[in-house]
Length: 434
Image (cartoon, rainbow, N blue to C red; front, side, top):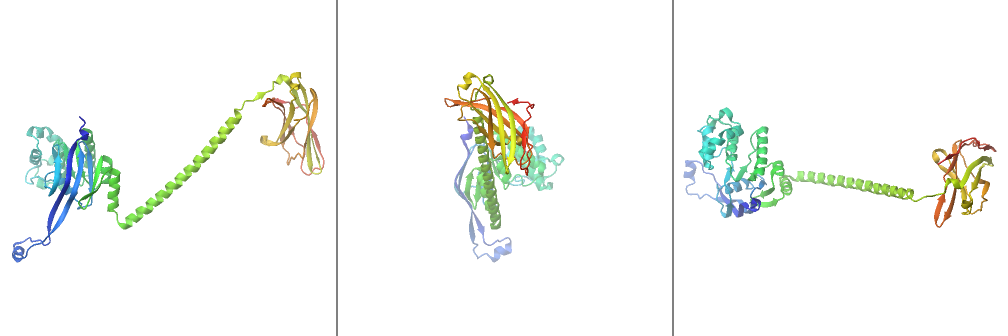
């Protein structure tokens, strides 16, 4: 059966109160002076109607300010404190790590304290013997294991206590700021241990102020504030609220400005992406249109049905106007002549820039002969190479039939400022068919 749906810890409406005296009496003289003066107390609610459920195999982080009730809640779960109200149900063996070296006898050696603490946690002597070297190695105590614990530093006591509790092989681990002491290497070992716990399906309840640890390792989180749970569930949501509670008014204003700036940058980025997307759509539409034009079926007039040649080209200028006369010799087959074809010419400048053109559409042409087409107001602004294309076309049942283009290149001799001039095409230049 899937254990993840079973509850490892169930807390129902738990409250825990402490009486805080208004006057502290710490001497016999103080007791005698205040013998007939009743001491008054203030009720402090460490936990106020707290309820939550932790599933088996879940890694839960508990966040909150100092004094919010985190450690008190963990001690209630470890049965160190009894709640004043409510109930706590725990399914499984618990291994608590609540304070530095709690339960250690300072006059005993580290070795003796390992056996003492492990026995308290329910381990047999055989189990302790088997895991002793692992406990010592993880704690990094090494050659100091046989020295008295009172000579240990706080970090050494903490590492030893943590190592014993983690090797007790319990179902549920309660940890209160286990990474508050220890160097970077020891903290990295703890991180790797947390990953191992998750793989083994251990239930871990971790009290910490480290939001990074909660984000990285925890499946869910609780946020305590003044003894109450103000948020629970999603890790990122709980962590964000915890950070917000820790901020001063000035910090909140700065964060608000940062968030506003971030939103503005995101809006600018979205607008830039939108414009780029629109341009891309326009480009694709133009490309699609071009492809559509290029894929229109062309109806070609067979080349054996005609002969066509640009035979003569002349330019002239008069009264600041230019004129171009183009002579074309042609010959149609009988079948092509019945279709009443037309002859068209086009003139292109440098880089195949279209200048002008005309055709014989509407005129009835003989079967063979030579015709001259005139282009008036023909404007060449500078000396440049031009190309003249000639072709045949006709329509039949809505279909346009075209011939291959006959093209000739010519060099214009006309220049601005000339009152009159002419140039005739050199007939020895080759005709290229495209």
